[in-house]
Amino acid sequence: MTQNPHNEADRKAQPLSTSVECANDSAPLDPSRHRALAEARRADGDELGAVAHLIAAHTLDVYAAAAPNASAANLCDVATGYFMKGDQGIAEYWYRLVLTLDPHVAVACQNLAAILASGGYVSEAAAYRERAYRIQRVFIEGSGTEQRRALVLCAAHTAGNVPFDVLLPGTTCCRIKYAIDYAADEEDQQLPAYDLVFNAIGDADIAAPLAGRLARFVSRCVRPVLNPPDAIARTQRHHTASLFDGLPDVQVAPCIRSETAPVSPAALGALLAAGGIDFPVLARPAATHGGDGLTLCESLAALEPWRAAQTEVCYLTAFRDYRSADGFYRKYRIIFVDREPFPYHLAISPHWMVHYYSADMEPHPWKLEEERRFLDDPHAVFGERVMRAIAAIGTRLDLDYGGIDFTVLPDGQVLVFEANATMLAHFERETGALAHKNTYVQRIVDAFERTMSRHLTT
Image 1 (spheres, rainbow, N blue to C red):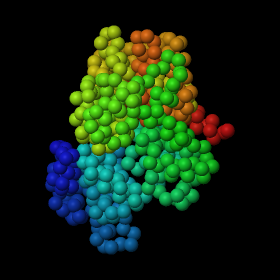
Image 2: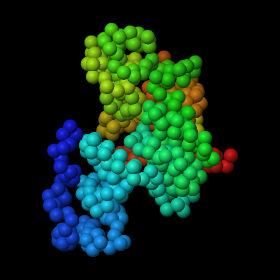
Image 3: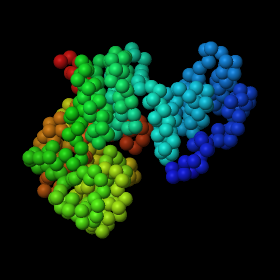
Image 4: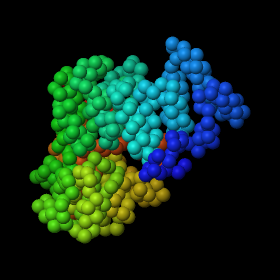
């Protein structure tokens, strides 16, 4: 598969799959073609593929007969089955056929947008995402017979990295996802019954344009709201230093928010000086995570190309060299559930931009062993002074679910890189090298379950 996000027009809606059957199918609306493909799949031992094509043939027959009960629902289930398996190219093929038959199937638009976005086709993905949420704002995941019905407030384009699918498992929760940014106020009164609300719009930059809409929802809501919008609003990057101001043994690098590009290098220098920021400087677009668009600049000259190209809101942060004595950079993540700290991971990297996926942890047993010690007993690793500082951060952050990425400096100070609700936590493969971490993830999930129960009984 060749991905070319800068030339989407050349794709001509070809599926991402390398399957010849999908990519070269010139007659997707011909039932006889699908029956022939079903036979071919069966001969190859692909019974699932055979059934998929037979469902397609039957669906096309019904539509061709203009039957009043014609529906693409079964075909959409086929697409979603492949989507959930991770066979995105085949899923795309079926979703496109679904939308050819019925252009108003919101879940097909929604999942097709996700497939296209993962392939780098940004503008096409955005078009399908827009289409999905114009059709439908409420998506229910679960049978409704589970123990709890949780309304999840979402922004249609993104909700940051708040892992509500992990925190609200389908075994215990029916998730009612509500794309509130596309919903009119009166739709709040038409929602299915729910027990509590979890605000999954965890990125304060994404939430800011929705502040009025979210406030109106909360003012009318009679159910408990976890991670209320006003608590999220305090976590923008340039507010972090003031949020934790005065906490003993806690440091945050100065950060400023640049709404528009400074008019000149001199104006940029003045902006940095006013914010108390010396070089090196980290520049990043707002509402981004995982290092997307993050640049380290050693001088005003190095930062000039960024200034000249700035077209969106950005943050400028003083860079602190936080290398340990052994030359590695360490970034710890603590998750706070109802203000209580839980260790989630430690990433150790030779590079200053530390992310777990790029830190090359798995091939190095010493890294995994050091992380294991942190997960098992952070008090023993850090000592009482650091743990008091971390507990104070959790209290001041004041979220039902949130967290910090941080390191511990040689003098015992906690240097906070990021503190907000967009802290990803997920289970690892049971057969993988990181499976031992699942015990600690389960502790986070269990703590969040206790938090929900407490809110429902008070």
